[in-house]
Image (cartoon, rainbow, N blue to C red; front, top):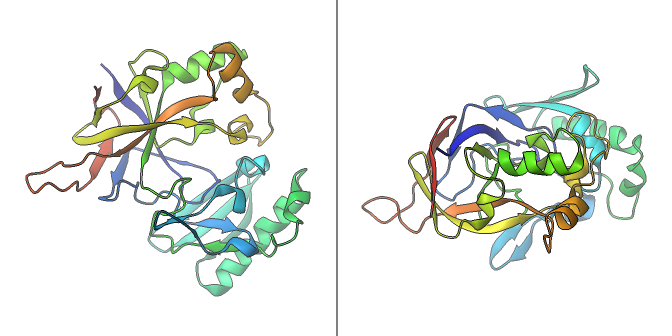
Length: 272
């Protein structure tokens, strides 16, 4: 039986995931508390428009595809007091709230850290400094796509990739919300209709084409695995793909509205 084995949310875009026992999926299809903050470049502190929806391209802020050393940071976000703590090498890098002074303190500390990394020169390009910490700490809005979604991959796919690489590959490289087990490798790429996770009914959307963020070791921040070329060459993929997006089904209750709900470890997964 296919079932949920791990759940993650990412309070700050591009930073440490939180492993949790349950996720609340909102009525808009986004995970509550997921990507509620982001460090954006100075000239990209406002969203772009895509089909009438806010769009925050990851290329216009701190993300693992361009700044892999972010993976070495450990982050804890208190979503009650809305305080962010970032650690590095076991010591505190910064801790502050989301008021104006706190945001400036957080942005300054992260800027200093990134500038000291091998990719720090990227941050010195025109229009990028000072970094701006955006988001209210409550609203999930900084996903890679303007429409709300939940992301999922299977352990079978990750294990198959690891075998091809000759490495142990961690779920966290792929920054999905849900990891499942009990299906054959790559089975999630064949989903085309409804997908039920616990009590929630989704519809399968596009497979997830991966970027250089997956090359970053989730503990050290070093690029130590050639994930993209291995996916295309070893598995004959046209584009490097692992995992699936899930969008709300068109109707879930008697009123015809999709209201969201809770996903828990152990929930059964059924797919058309």
